[in-house]
Length: 475
Image (cartoon, rainbow, N blue to C red):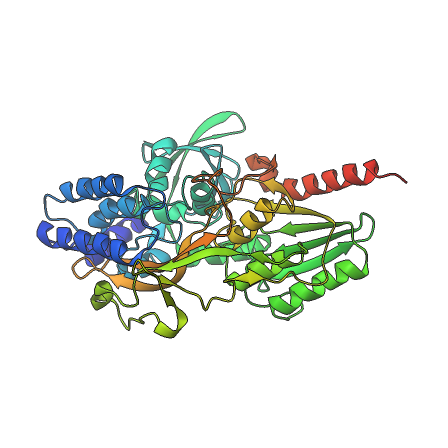
């Protein structure tokens, strides 16, 4: 019970001080007002009357003194109701630091598969790997997932972002306490190899969990570089893996130069196929997504249809340290009083890249493909320039709200939120895909055993399709 006592002591120290309901309601009002003032896409997925009602219900729950963390558990789902994957409420900085550094949390990494929770990494003795978690401290996994997914998601109604962020993002163990108020020791009911069992695990600080993870499972660690390129002579296929749109590739070159060299190599080898792997790529620099696409078309093309900013400076900046107003020389004022960021390099008609790649393209994606990655994917999908393999991506098909922003700190509870100030609209007409993300042509799902065996089913499916296409060509 020692770690449980430590956790409770930490909470008493950091979060047990009660705040009067009037002050918390002031914070909730400040929070919603800041989002309404600054976030240009606030009603993109949730209409104003519905969002108003959600915040009103949250305010009605603040009828007695409560701690900042208790208030967080009320306000966070209201913010998540925007369905903006770039907008998430965070605890006070001191509490979050403790959550990430010293609070004893569940020593397990999970994967969410088919609405169930499975142990991917047991950071204690490893015996629970592969087990389905049925309940923790008497709370069913279904209820725990519902609570966490009400706080964590992507853009719109995509079903893959929340499970991905809770699993591959290692947020489950943090959310278990921050969102669901589950404390150690952790009494776990599970099912493994067809048999039910129970186990009790003490907590482990996240810093220690990371050390164990790196030492025991080095294959889980993402590389320091952000892109790789390989060519398969046997099938005439280039394989371009992009972990992030930014930084340097495996050869140390900036991605802009690396992309150019990769396409030049495809041209020199007369490549027939290209696999672009953007699984678990959370985004990055807008221009790099556009560049990656540009080599796949021959005609000039628009990339964005609009880049909307509400104002140049904001009333909520009084709760922001070192606020930075939007520079007037970077925008164009619209008749409706809002602004277009016409200085963005992706604004206007874009030139196709050279050399042009005319072969078959296979895009690998999942619920970790987000932001700039989804701008690239949706443009690729709209132009019918690839076959999509994996699962639905995490970002909005028609754009997102991100770009510049400001960190709002609520004056009484010290909860924080990075208010995004620009909404992107892709140059894609219609609304066929509604509130969803980019859909796969070939959907891939995993069992926990396949994950533990390091299967790569998306890549295997891409090569299967390439093999079929090559076999169909006349000799």
